[in-house]
Length: 363
Image (cartoon, rainbow, N blue to C red):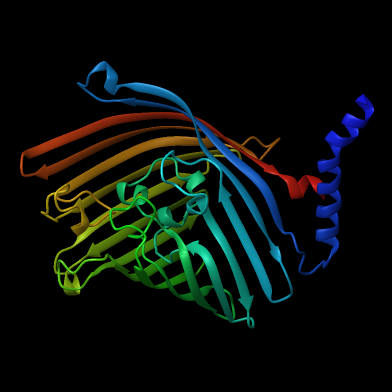
């Protein structure tokens, strides 16, 4: 009986090995399985509020992410990709809300491809484009961007592969489970340019129109222009994101976010980074009583300034493991009918990220 239990316990691993090896060998040029891994991140987070009470200062050990990645090819023209998160907040969050990607891609030729399914909205900026597990601390607008939506898109790629023009129609980020708008038929219209200019400059630029479910300012849309520019040189790289949002025609009144990060790759194992940003929302509508009539990416009538420094370490003996440490300061001013309030906090974070690259070990 004990021997039988041991065999049964090893059966899933045995089947996984058979499945993985056969899938890889199915077509050497277009394998069915090109990505199969789990990734996770856990942080020790400390938050300190200058002049605050003891209850305002807290330290917690928390699991930030636990994700499954699956990707590959169905034929030489059709490919697929899935990323599913298994850590979510309690409440009304649904399983599909935590499905980041679940799309099918059709490659017509070397220039044109078409994609449909659960996808990230095509919005420019390098903080937005980064994997969430790699974003150490973030802008307020990033925290409130419900970017993973059902969408369909078309992409044109230049012959040299250095430029992509992308058009997408999908659900608006204003429609999500738990939103005051509910899951209405709200849509988004997105155009993006992903470019490589020479050896040192990359771009992620977009123009977007998000249906916000109301016509307070006459349009019923939140306009978005995102200009993300990245520079790379030797051991240094960095980006500057400028995001402008407006519910007024021709951007008569603008909310904006400016975010930048600079990385110094000191060695193959060690990276030192600085990141900061400034955000501004000019909307004077009361936050609570008029909740449907504001830019969900930023608190109305507020400013937010943040900056910090940190390190990331990936040991040469195992690049699938990353340790990080950072210190970041946040200062937010909010202006309302009852006056001005200031929220300042100092965040200290120590964490560990690791991948379980199942496919690599099967091979």
